[in-house]
Image 1 (cartoon, helix red, strand yellow):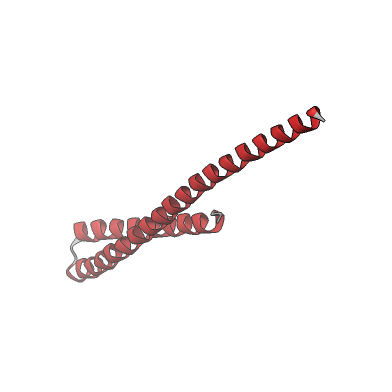
Image 2 (cartoon, one colour):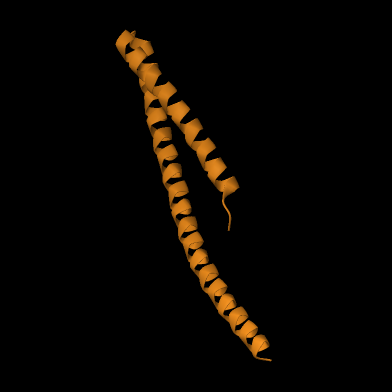
Amino acid sequence: MAKLAEEQRVDLSLKEDVIKLEKRAEGFRSAALKQLEGAIESYEAAAQTHGVALDAAEKGLVAAKEVGFDEGIKMFSKSVSFNEGTIKAINKIVSTLRSNRLR
């Protein structure tokens, strides 16, 4: 009988420890998910800003081509390529983050 009572105390103690640890882990997971959502929002804001820069660079490229400004053509072409590549990379990152997050 004493052995059974001791086993029940151990079981109850372990159960309480597990519950505390699970709640703590859930808090960490919840905080990580909030941070992940913040990172996704930041990436999306960056992509949008790169889009605005891309539009400006494309306009600059057209204008540089119209007047034959070779240095401007080179500079705006690099900017167009940079912003297109960056937007593509950001979109891939956001997609990966969204598809791999756990609720």
